[in-house]
Figure (cartoon, rainbow, N blue to C red):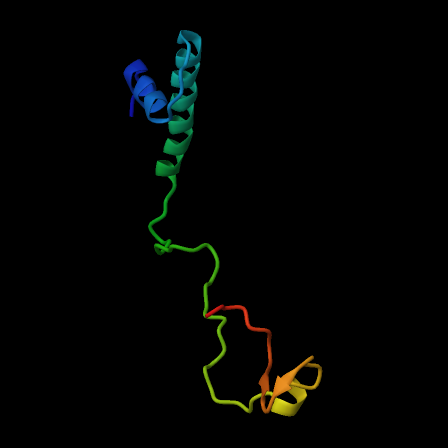
Length: 96
């Protein structure tokens, strides 16, 4: 892809950048160099490489969802400042 002054100006407009004439010329050269460098990837033989979306193996880290014993009520309420039966008692925060 050829980097033209019009393309640099269009990209600068999209990025809401105001470039001077010298800056536009420098961007044209730098973008051309970047694309040329990226173009080196076309020279690689990737025929034996399978397509992938991740560079490392991705696996599920979640544990199985299984029923297990709950934390004992008495132990849960042991340090509660106030309780009502088997529940925490808290100050009322919603007015009528």
